[in-house]
Length: 219
Image 1 (spheres, rainbow, N blue to C red):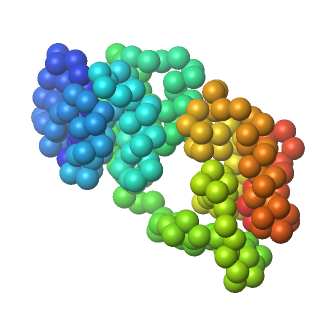
Image 2 (cartoon, helix red, strand yellow):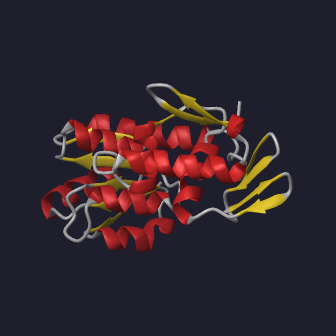
Image 3 (cartoon, rainbow, N blue to C red):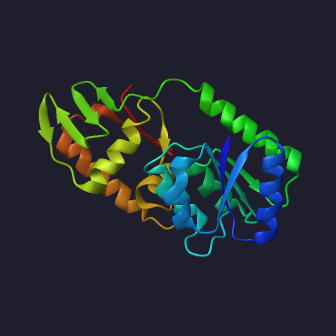
């Protein structure tokens, strides 16, 4: 398996590269977040340190998830709860705090890869609820066949819900995905954008508020 290793510490990178190679993987090491974004298509899995010299690893993860479903295992010294929560919410498949035993790291890599290869078929990119249709790829919304114009942020809020149609999505997760950081986003901004989306759709029943938690698109 081709493993892209993003690690700026030469000693750590050398040890990991050797271990990966000895266990049948094909490691390629990069030092910078920009290199991850440029080379991710050449890998089957990303092993990501968060302390990169040019971009914070969480920002790299956010940008990567906008364009790729590449399996990502975060391996970092950053073990505070906020970083762990953000890493997982931004799309990391696993999160390990250094130092980690080699056997555990290899087992986690295998588990993440196994889940990725045995996952269900890709979710539909066009989602419907009643007569509301959200085309996630074309960024187009129609109601009863007529197109509804949404602002960029309004569409991102709706898309984050539509991509998980029928599933409750927390306010924190929505703010993480749309604004990049639930800890810094202004909660009121989410309320305003949802109110505007509901008004433009004219179908309040397709966006359900789950009191004390978040929202759901569709049944």
